Amino acid sequence: MKFKITISLTLICLIMGIAVAWQYKSVYNNKKTVSAQTMTLDDLKDKLIIEKKNNDELRSRNAALSKELSQFEAAKGNIDLYKNNLKMEIEKANILAGLTDVKGSGIIITISVSDADFAWVGLRDILTTVNGLRAAEAKAVSVNEERVIAMTEISEIGNYIIINGVPMSSDKPFRIKAIFEESKIDDSIKMLGNIFAKMEEDGFVNVEVEKVDSIVIPKIGNNRPSFNFDLVKTE
Amino acid sequence: MNPMLSKDKKYVLMFIFVLLGILSTVQFRSILHSNKNKPSIAYEIESLKKELESEIAAGNELREEIEFNTKKKESLLKTFTAGEDDGQLIEQWELAKLYAGLTDVKGDGVIITLNDAEEKNPIDAEWSLLHDSDIYEVVNELKIGGAQAISINNERVISTTEVVCAGPTIRVNRNRYAVPFEIKAIGDPKRLYSTFTESAIYTTLKWLEIRIEIKEAKDIEIPKYNGNVDNLLKGLEVVEQ
Figure 1 (cartoon, chains in turn yellow, brown):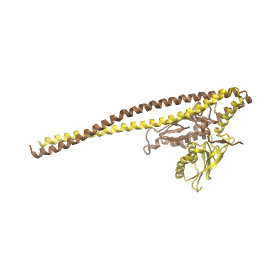
Figure 2: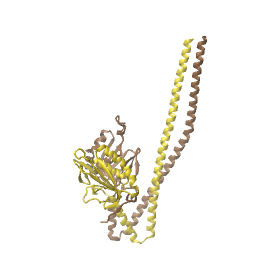
Figure 3: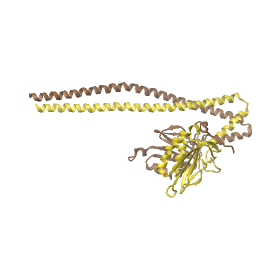
Figure 4: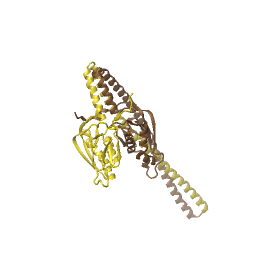
């Protein structure tokens, strides 16, 4: 009799154990699907916001273009209008290419080392700074008066950092200038702060940022190897 | 039957049934709960997906329209100024656009593809992922190798092009891209190839088992910059010489 009871109790407990385990698994799985769905949901919402913002920007760009075109239509025969417009387009492209000196509100960054015997300014410091400036929407950048253009390289040989083919001693401070839209300058400085803090932590360099109302950034110098187009063809 | 044993049995059974009761309550609640949530979330996801698709389609349509209007503007400008200054203005414009990255270009060079490592790095899972710095360092090596035009996933690299992490994606020219990345460069293919394969970043990425491939290629096509140039020039003033 006692034996029988023991057996039946064991059986009941076993079944209950399985049931409990099953239960937990099912509850856990339900939670998992729900959280996975919430994740895709958030992801989709983010994407939608970005896409909407992009489209707004595209719409206003297209509206500006259409307006320009209708002005062109209205001014048929007015050669001066076309000429001036063309000159403006040429100037815009030249600014973007880095072929003009430019002026605006901006910042001057000085990257230096306190003891040149033990530390130096590294290629990565300059590369990270330049990329960070671009991410913060800098409109024009120069490193030690060398304009950074599309194909500007940053390389390192011995104690020199080479930019646009021009060697610069990595023991001396680097002065990096950047022009920003005035209304965005403070946000940009804030964003750059994190990058510079990390650079100081990792590389024994000191980074100083100075906000300036008006700075001039020079155009690309003559015969720079980064300004060469002999191997590209246009249609 | 032993009366003591039968009393014990009663308690045990009671205990078991209490447990069972709790269990089935939890079970029902959980099922009810998930049934309540599932259809509404799935429904929301579906409608968001549809909305996203239509936004993307609208964006593509707008881009086409902008492309069309830009071409129209160019041809208008060209037609009406061709007789002026012996066509010098047009020539200047074509050159300026080439220098700024505002024309499609073609030429020989190299194509690099980059992707996360196939397996998670056992020391640090972060190491098996491609980062923004990897990409801009690769691009910098191509510039050192004398590249004359570069694109990242067909985003033309111009003077303002940033490469920066934005969550799981990487932002280039304000647009987001996920892996894999294709970087095209026009220049001297041999020089680009050797500069890149001898670089520190190539060795590092290979060591981390990041999937990286470089091949020389002929007649690579690199598209022009597609964003809004006016936005890139806000806040800049030309210094008259």
